[in-house]
Image 1 (cartoon, rainbow, N blue to C red):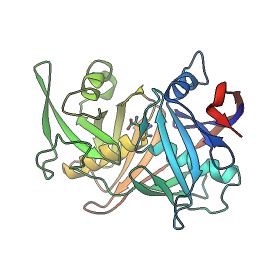
Image 2 (image 1 turned 90 degrees about the vertical axis):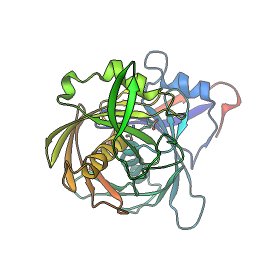
Image 3 (image 1 turned 30 degrees about the horizontal axis):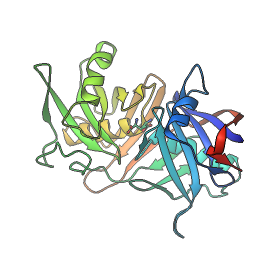
Image 4 (image 1 turned 135 degrees about the horizontal axis):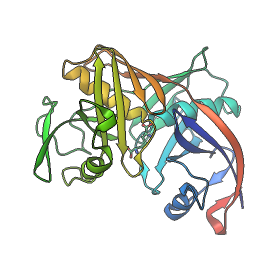
Length: 283
Ligand SMILES: N[C@H](CCC[C@H](N)C(=O)O)C(=O)O
């Protein structure tokens, strides 16, 4: 069976985007893993599935799978690519759409300058997927790894993030400590591990060891979580430029129950068709 897809990237965080509105798509975990393989498959950090809305006040449903095949709650760079995709494919004529994810509704908006802005919803500090947090007002928690205590902030953007401040992201222990934070027993659903360097109150550098994907060139929800943590710690202003290996995002948060706004690029790389074996996919 043939499956149409578009390869896209947001600051080098790359995606396989599939139209599940005009195609009936059923992909097993193992098939997603095979498709995500950068040598034997297409290769991507996440697979994004566009599905019909589940109710009248929503334009689309948005499902996200890491390249290990596991479904997750949110993907920020993917949300911008999702909006670009549905517009380019004529699935919607709207500039701003309402998109339902596993953890609430987000609102991507196509900007005239070619960027995409997304209302990413309200950050959570004591969500159920992070039972770790005893006191939701505490923004810094000690996390013990091999006898060393790391001061981390835990923020959920729908998906869980553990963010710490480092002096220099270029020499931060992302490869060695990132996986140990990701799989720390205090995070039963695992966690994305962020390493944030404060340049000024308006500018940070960020690296993220993503849950189930490893270090990516950029992480949209990670940028949201890092800025929220920095603002709550009194280190950042309400609008911050976030420098990642893949490029720059702008994140804004007014605090409290305000939504986090993320602005950045979304790029289509190529359209493709892949032959799926068996019953996994029916046109
Ligand atoms: N690895 C993440 C999902 C993708 C998030 C990232 N690519 C983004 O742009 O937000 C998780 O397991 O929660």
